[in-house]
Image (cartoon, rainbow, N blue to C red; front, top):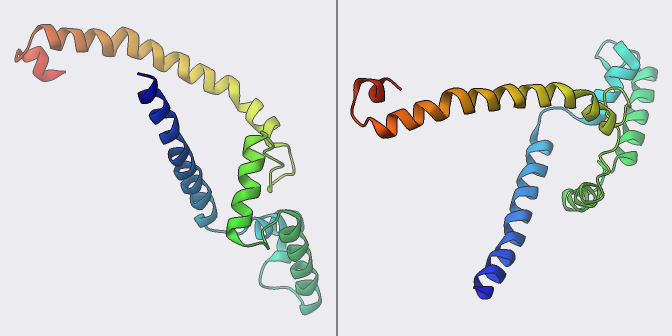
Length: 147
């Protein structure tokens, strides 16, 4: 029994690494660059195509600084290690869009999430479970086939 538990615990390591790598890569494969998002949000039309060469140079310089600030100028494996460290320490940083703390944004949405979970649990307990029990106790009946 102890051998089984140790084996399962050791299998959690590659599973954790796989899940975090996939999550990290999905975020990196998403279209758009966080520096460009920040430039378009903070500078309005200055980040667009119809600007002067001088302003474009300033925007490019600001975007380079933001990439350096957020570590987006580093190789992907270095970004992953930094991201994993921040994940382990629950340091989610600030939103690129409005510079609010990510924890604040999460806290704002927790009440709605709890309400949705509560109502979905009610549906499961009062609708889905009784229908499942009925289907199990009345196999091949019209009600079983309908549910």
